[in-house]
Length: 218
Image 1 (cartoon, rainbow, N blue to C red):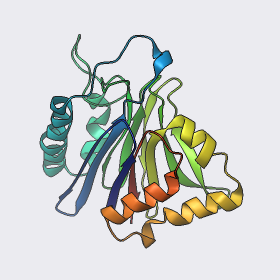
Image 2 (image 1 turned 180 degrees about the vertical axis):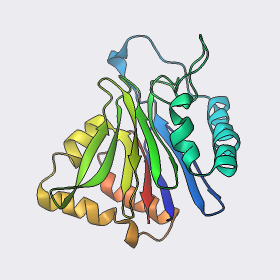
Image 3 (image 1 turned 30 degrees about the vertical axis):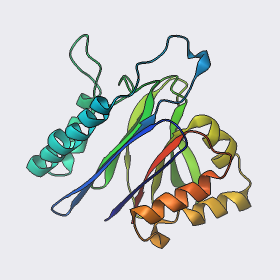
Image 4 (image 1 turned 90 degrees about the vertical axis):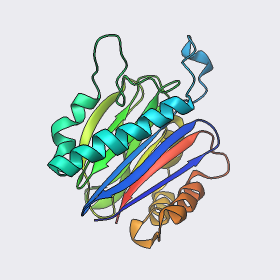
């Protein structure tokens, strides 16, 4: 199993990390902080310190846990990542303070933890087979926020992206257009992370606004 990680953004913030612990792949992809004028109270700005703390969490806590306990560390500990001591925001998960909110992917081996913050404007979409046909399926919406752990198979692609774009472009596309998007994001045809960035940009199109971060499994 091999991970491809990519991103595309016109605004917002992205934290993207990848590692290999022996033969176990690991990745973290978090994006968000869309401009939401109707959200009310302004969210805290995304700082370099915050992005650095996320990168440190991945390289130290998460990769360190995988090194010690193996890929099962994701399943055993992941829901603990989304809680924190009273008065403190969790590092990742629906309640994390990442600007206006975020959606994210944390993966190890054959499983991925995904989440979206309530009201963030972001969601999680994945490729899946529905009645024998490959489609895009929304896993977590920003309407109420939430989190889940999903199983990864070869060819799986997960996107953390603006929900408005997902609804209007990916999920409501004609069958023919959906097949075109799926062919562009076919992990078997993508050479490396830089190539994945270009494929995501092609899928987003010229009218896209916001940020996408994605994980693909080869």
